[in-house]
Image (cartoon, rainbow, N blue to C red; front, top):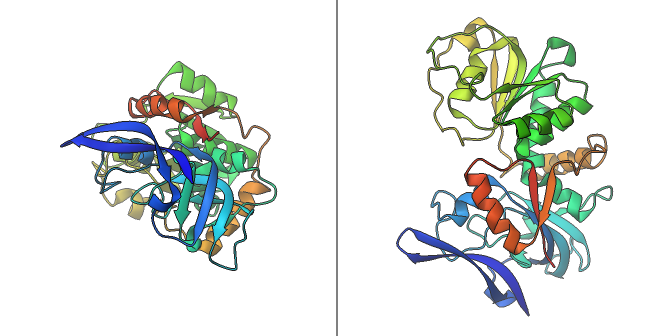
Length: 329
């Protein structure tokens, strides 16, 4: 059987090009489950993979797409049947295993999640890795911080993880402040229910002071680097900070122990890639039910294979607002 897929080729050393090609299922990697993909979504790892980032993808040619949702067409295990609607986020999908930017994937059964009945396939990809990571972040935050404790800062509020975090926190009764770069981002984040926004410059203190004026009861950070450092140093007593990204850098500059030993601030790392399956299923059940909002599709753009290649460039240029999902024909 032939199908279409986006493939990233290294034509010359460190020169990578994206092409839409025709492939066969026999070319896919080994696995117990073959899925006809209906939807995927665009994440930062996909953008990096498409440009040949060896920290994400080691071997090329390769098909990105760390998220996928669709229907099982072949199964070698009893737990999954032909015709079942399923989804995958994380693990090695789209990194070194051909991913959801192809119309078919073949994967280990241990990666596959049965689609919750209260979500459509499209809705699972509106969430995707971004929504799942956001849910894990909010889970940790609400275990440590209550709405009455004060404002929650969301760094990168207009991005995939950030905008879902704003939606979840608002639904749970928290007052949210979003960090934004442009007026368009500001309008978008306020439309999601954020109380107010601040600029990237306001969230990026470079004075080198070991402690800053306490402002935030809690923080959801999606970018790392000095904005994360600034957030930790300006979190209130006994507050909590979650972190899940590194687009602003993998280091935490101007960092010291004082926020932790003098204010009791908690720094919580979030990993969605290898999240254990029991917790993964619990989170997806929550996303399908109590955390599912009426504005789930707000800020979502649906594109074809051709369209997603343009969106990759927008994402890497820092110009992408909201969530992009790929619909296969």
